[in-house]
Length: 113
Image (cartoon, rainbow, N blue to C red; front, top):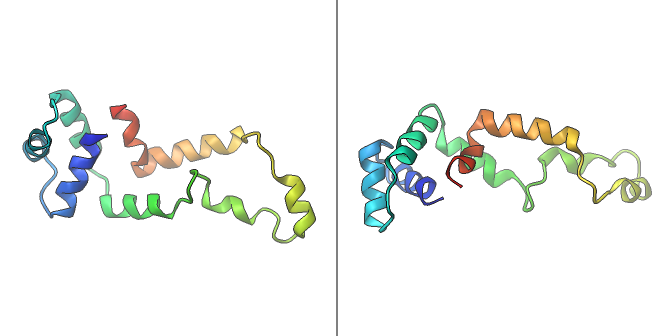
């Protein structure tokens, strides 16, 4: 996770996210830098708009629920809405969420444990 944080620091300070800059930030933080992780992150972030990815991540409610999930029972009335709530996750929606994460770069944390 510290690799992603280092990239966010570089982005926030207006510096280019490249291997040298990322390594310098990690070294300054006292992180034992793995060159392969640095290369993988730089490659993964190459076509990612970090500002947009951060804004999208901030829009997701706590708990990781999809933004569209709250509108399910609005037209049907309050009683039906309570009956539809289930503790069992819907696996059909999980596939769509995974594809969206991969497309937007939000799944980058999975690369680095």
